[in-house]
Length: 252
Figure 1 (tube, rainbow, N blue to C red):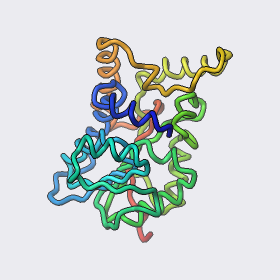
Figure 2 (tube, rainbow, N blue to C red):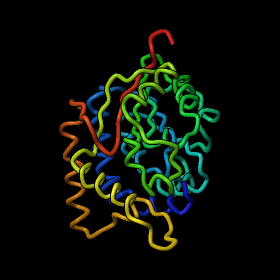
Figure 3 (tube, rainbow, N blue to C red):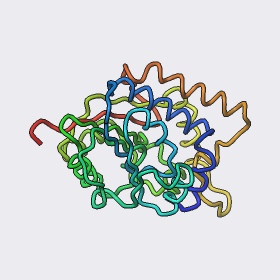
Figure 4 (cartoon, helix red, strand yellow):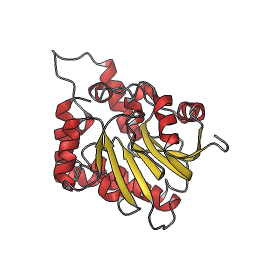
């Protein structure tokens, strides 16, 4: 991921429609699948600049792991010096478990050896523990956003299930999301691939491209967030992203 994107993320993830909408979906899914519990240990791998850590604190005691020193510095600025954060990569630098929940929000697509990362995550899950993850969906949606974020791949349900199975994990439930905005996003990305590029423009992330007026931001957030009433209970057949709740295979 380009270093300047961490600064962009830190500036925007509290109010940009995409970050806020995704958090609302994630919260709804966590509430559906995590019953109230005291002392639950949660590890957020690839915690970035910390935008999801405050949300996760509603569900347990949270530890963050992040590979980028720049992102981790921004995360500490947000959460203070006493928040338990570790710098490192998956799987070699995972903090010692067990953890009741591991979360990986838009992380797996960055890792060349996704199966190795998933095996590492499985190794720190407590018995009965869960992995909750999101990944970008559908290879035909590949765009400059994926390039600038150094993505390795975009996922389908079958592709994700195969990687999980190879690592001794299985999805308990999964769904595509960001489905209402899927048609216009797909149309724009396909059009971008058909039209020739003008000059030598720098690659830009979708967050940079979709910054708009306050009203536009509110409308897009409302559309995206409305799926929180459906996604935790129903598996949607398409969307810009994919979310899954995952458990270790029996006996693995």
